Image (cartoon, helix red, strand yellow):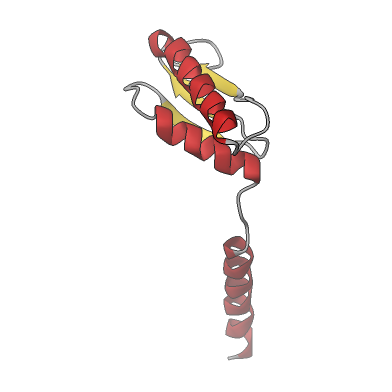
Length: 102
């Protein structure tokens, strides 16, 4: 009986640690930018870095328009006063390119 309690305790501790993890302010702003620009058919979100950088995979045709959309969304955040600078770093992994998403 005692041996089965340790794995259960480990699972409970891991679950509580994950529940306490929150986004950084930069990530919250990046999520808002993603939602504003999540209308491109070939652009998929890979992750949002701690510094607020969006990492996406996309077809080359939509990479530039998506990046421009994110820049506009960042400018709107500055105008609303929720961001200090219009930083909107985006890393686009192009489908079919060497080192990109496949």
